[in-house]
Length: 126
Image 1 (spheres, one colour):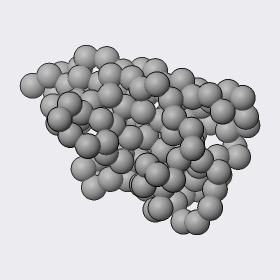
Image 2 (cartoon, rainbow, N blue to C red):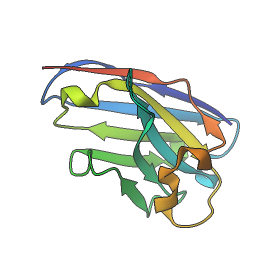
Image 3 (spheres, one colour):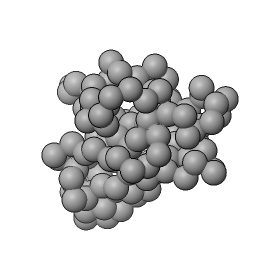
Image 4 (tube, one colour):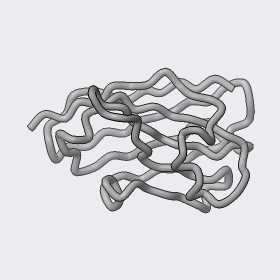
């Protein structure tokens, strides 16, 4: 499975971005998907996850109500809609994939994922 994240950029606080994660090599509908981020000097942080069917989602408290994860299995793409962005959202954002197994909440653990994309930089200026 190959993952290609895109859509990052520079935005002012309060602005919006939509990240995309294109999946190739396997059918997207077979996988749970997650977004993580890594800021300089901090540990990798869970952002959001979505089940293979799209019926289950899970968010970090820090983004709940501002970010929305979704998927289009026909396009083999997962999205992360980010609104009301804050400077603390600045990080390299990564998408990840794993075969289903258990409730969606367990997908907050990066160790659960076998496949990772290369990351896209999100920078939010104050």
